[in-house]
Image (cartoon, rainbow, N blue to C red; front, side, top):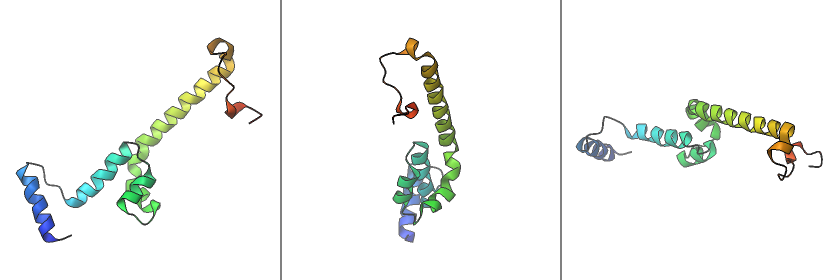
Length: 106
């Protein structure tokens, strides 16, 4: 990146009163926001033009903890619902077709 681009960036940043950040900081901000917004690691990796997915994962994997925890909670809630339907299916919803996850015919 040229010095002229960096100078212009910092000039504009100061004009609008933003704190000191670098263009490289912005490169990290974009994938951080994307990952926290549930954009897949694969899409983020391709957007950043990393040569491998592991490069992206190594840099940004710490951001996925909240996403992973949310996924675990979602799976837990879904399994509890399936368990309740299996136990109390007649009372909960008799019109619902059988769940293919627990169907021996699937």
